[in-house]
Length: 200
Image (cartoon, rainbow, N blue to C red):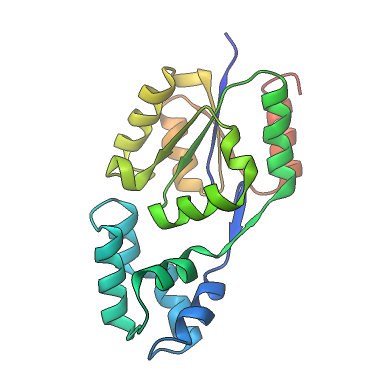
């Protein structure tokens, strides 16, 4: 039976840079861009949002109160989500796997604002068999619950899953379940690692 491929999204298929959002949000808030960059990348509010414990509205209200943002939710959402750029080599790798008939899934710690933006702006995103997002599951990688949910979604487990992620702790959690896990450091290294697992 052919393996199933599980792709992380951020830093694997799309790059992201919170400084882009920080500059736009700062123009409508009481905070400096550098402070906002640090806040957006490390705030516990983002973890609450991406684990499904805060709604979009709740996240917007909490962040606005913390930084003095003066815009509405629509404006905030457009600034917050517009931080992504495609990673062409990995997208091409995925396209090659699809042409060869492999099933592929996206498996991401993320939020609904980000996913709506990526879905709207990046055509490659529509080419997967399924999508599992932390905010929908109520758990984040490397928590075991989200890995179990991924196995349930694709109907496979253990070595049937080949998993690409840029974070070592997430890869370790997949490997502990028997997944064939590859730490994505560069497209060349990932391609080489894949070639040791399948004819590639």
